[in-house]
Image (cartoon, rainbow, N blue to C red):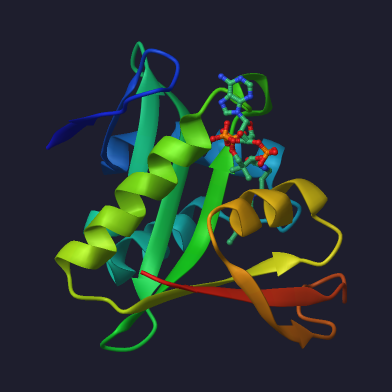
Length: 154
Ligand code: ACO
C-alpha cells in the first residue's frame, strides 16, 4: 500500500520490501551510530512487517522506521533514520505520523524507544512528539554509552 505524506518534500511512504534492503542499509550505516548488518535488519522486518516503512523520493529510500510489538498493547520503535541530506524537511515526521497511525489501528496503547543520551537532535524530535524520558539505561549500547527510554501514549 502507498501512503502519501503531507507537509514533507515530494515523496511517499510505503511498506518496506526486501528489494529495499541495500538502500535501507545505506541510510542506517550513514545515520545510526550502532552497526546493523543487512541480515539483522531483515530479522527486524519479520518482527512486525507492517511497521517497517520507507520514505522514498523518485524510488530512492531517504528514510525508514521499523518497530516491534513489545507487548500486546505497547509498540517499540527499533530503528528510525533519515538520510542526512533530507533531514529537517518533514520526512521523519511523516514516518512517525504513519507509525503512530498504525499503532492506533492495531490498538496499541503506548510506544517506547531507546535513544542515546547524547543524541540531542533525536531527543528534541521525540519530545516534540510528546515522548517523555522514563528511564536511564547505563551502558546500553555496544560502545557502553547510555540510553534513555522514551515513552508516549499512542
Ligand atoms: N523547514 C524547516 N524545518 C523543518 C521543516 C521544514 N520544511 N520540516 C520539519 N522541520 C523541522 C521540524 O520542526 C523538526 O524540528 P526540531 O529539530 O526542532 O524538532 C526538525 O525539522 C526535524 O523534523 P523532521 O524534518 O520531520 O525530521 P527528520 O526528517 O529530520 O528526521 C530524525 C528526524 C529521524 C531524528 C533524524 O534527525 C535522523 O535521522 N537522525 C539520525 C538518526 C537518529 O538519531 N535516529 C534516531 C535514533 S533512536 C531510534 O532509532 C529508536
